[in-house]
Image (cartoon, rainbow, N blue to C red; front, side, top):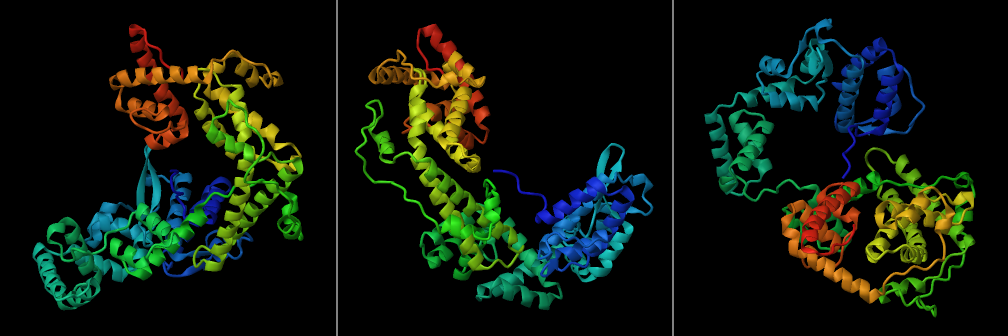
Length: 558
């Protein structure tokens, strides 16, 4: 999976990039100071207007995103990133700083707290800059920034200092009293409040002490059945289960949560998925027309997509591929209609998503966004179905005895799906022409046995697409030969590394696997790219060929 973006709101990142690129260093330093003053004022539970924030930092009120509101929690994070990026680009020299610069350790000693606590303060408004010291970058806290934070967050600092001063006897007393109350059925919230009142400690100190003890000693935990932190996979499974009609009560029992929290987790995951989903479409001027909905969505065209067909597929096509011939090919008019509708639905979905506020999304907006994406997917599936046999036709024409025909079809289908997403229908070209070149270009890279003919394709020669016949062996001979080759591989496979064994087994459906995987699927399994997967397989096959040559065995070419 791709790494998460560093900034939580892209508008703040865009502002930082603009200042780094275009603002002089003295101006950037002034903006850093304004951002530092703003940071300690941010309340994590409030919303902030982006134009006002921009004006506070740059002295210029931006016209971009006039309705954008940023949640305080996100703003605390993004302002810190903003300060770090601008200070890094300004090349601030640590030795030439006009005021003392403190380290994390300095602040820890000054306020009698742990360094871990200081790092948590950075997420609550304590700004740090990046200074150059020799050839290295160092995190530093200007004296004025630390004093401003101490003045604004004095209560938090006092609580943290009290927690850091807990002795071992203090911790034992807290755990003992918490355990006694828990035995009588008190919840963590009740225990926290009562023990804090009894000991004169902050509730945060009590809660953290109990939580830390339970994590360190689970066999004697104060709250042994306290819900554990849910992973991203847990949240995804909860969302899928709720969407599938599962009982929220059973999910609550399984994950140690309340029914309301299960629904909340499912909703949060849904929002996160929709907001982070990439929406790619081919833009068109007609999408901005006032009558676009009427002309594109409310206009229909008849598509002849029967469930059965009298078409007779070629005898060379296996039975399960014959179903592809049930769906007829599209006319140019039908293609134009479907591609325009699919891209317009994505255009509308992207517009709705971009207009959503940073928080407090309305369920009706989420429903509308999801509905548009599902409708665009339905149209895309029609386009895929109507062009699948084109891939089969190309794969049949360029198959070699050493090539796995079904892998070629699988790889070609992946290329077809991507071609549908990238096809610009507004140019008036026939999609089959575009898709043919895309699939053939993929085969030219992935099937070395194609030799000279595919080399000619790489040069752009259209003489590649011909009706010439070849002298390939029959299907049965190919199958027998393939079986012999796979048996040979399995007999000497254990002489490879574990990664090479796994990659080759998945690629050729060895060791009891039902069907071979594509390079993309294997790459996802191994956590590497498609090209790296190919290299691993080729390396393994080269080792196997060296072994097989000595015994006079025959192996397939990758």
